[in-house]
Image 1 (cartoon, one colour):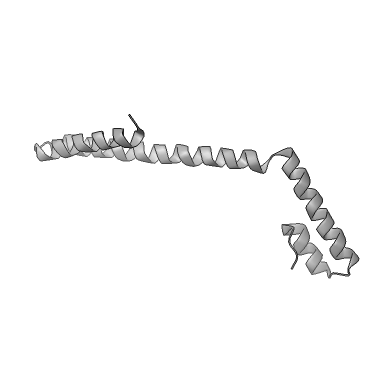
Image 2 (cartoon, rainbow, N blue to C red; image 1 turned 45 degrees about the vertical axis):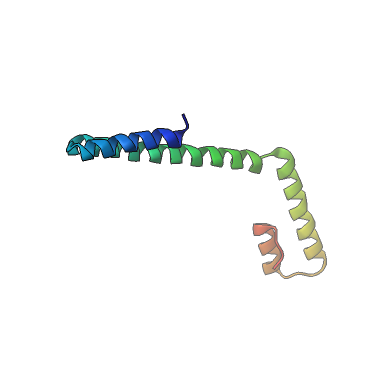
Length: 96
């Protein structure tokens, strides 16, 4: 059963409890569902951040990015760019 289907079945149980006049059970189930949904979302965000971090910290990609920035900086310095422009390149790797 998928997570969404499981949450749907829990929500259906909460509705059944509410319709049966069991407000306390309904509230308990609804709070549990809310906590589970938040936890699922947090885990998904965490996994996405881990994947992004892995891609961001790939040694070859970092090396290539550093070389790109150094080339930009050297070209800008050789062409007489101002200190402010050079600082912007050093900070962001982009020209002004």
